[in-house]
Image (cartoon, rainbow, N blue to C red):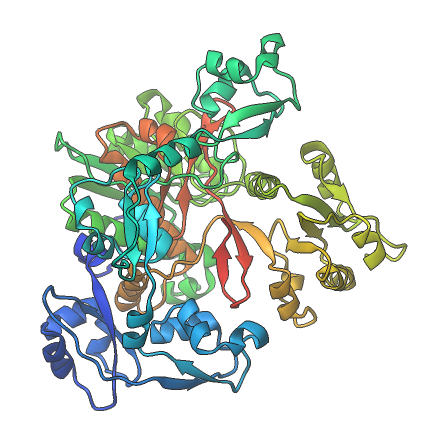
Length: 631
């Protein structure tokens, strides 16, 4: 018997208007109603409900509402400065978000935060928006090659609409070298910067070079493709290549090459629809709902199964996020047709072959799924002769390279490489404290990161301050990579690093999540002092668009979006937009890197055959107790 599977989730009209609409915030006072607030801002209650769906249930005093800004409306506020008493577990980031003030403005109003930090019971002065606006200095940005309105707006935490409002000249086109006003008002007597000079500076910046160390199995051909140069251009920069490519050679390469490890400031394109032909794109999702096993379970109800089956819950979260991406695309009027099938997966089996035979997956433009790497590889092989791209959306396994397979999650080795390449790009002195039990880590460093020095350990496996300080270098950042789960070893390393901070620049680094660092035995404030840094496949997104997305998801599904739900949205929306470029999916994957809400998609050829994602964030703990992306 053939089963039909459907999960009912209400349709979300998540349009591009919400993503680009200029908004302002309003703090609800006790006794205010939506009607009164709407009249104040000359909008309708419906306008407010669209941006704040939770407001339909109950309007809470001191909560913040997003209000669509209407052109020509002047908002008059007599709101004076207010105070806030710091409660346990509150962070600067949370307080700033609550009152919609910047980190700079809050610290300017409370200078003691710079010296004492945030402490429970402190009385903070929250500066009024009017006062902030009147004292705000002008901030400018000179447009560099490959920058877009989206990337610039993201960099400064504003919307594209706000950017265009302050710079109406860029509405039709963004010109390289143009000086943009980002925040504040320009000084009346400010000197005019010549665009020709800015363009020259931008051109010079584009000509900068860095060193790259040749890895095993790399050839002149693969290196030329990696850096977007011809083989002759690469040899002209590195004459020694005339005698052949050797492992360990240091090559001079341009920072604006296609290889992301060379330049962490890679440009990520904000894709817009360019499907001039109007052809409808066929998208297939193969998701492991495993309906037959649910219906065949006589001992457990489906509700009980949902409660205990983590894999199914992960699937449903991913599916909910993907549905939001599909609805967003349809709201934008994009010509897509989506088919969703139950892949009925276990780790080594699925019903993909049956679906292929019965439903002709070979006519699709892209297939998202299955989840297990082995099943994704089987699907890719079955569709390889039809050149249908298959996206493995969740697996971190390295897998086997296949021409039409795209692995959306960077594998662990990529995260490690990105971390070391970042430290190297900062001319850092790299040290490693490695537990003797972690022989594989020592072997990895010796083989792949030979310039990393191992810190000698005491007989009991701990680190002495003397040994560590003897290896530190003045005038450079000293990165200490910590690889151990031993609490005492972690404590002695951190203590040694903190004691060296008065004379050296030091930063703590981990290559993967370490549960011991999250335990009560480790002083969190020390991790902040040392600006703990680590590689991650996703980041935090506190933009207005991100808040709107989370509010919409919560309204529809009654829960906040999990990491799987956000990945479901990001993977699906990225795939849809790549199909709208008047190019094949393969062409866009080879030439365009993108950044969605929390995930990057920077595909590259794997062993010259498969396609792996190298989109990795380098994150660190900042002094304001927030996690930021390192530049």
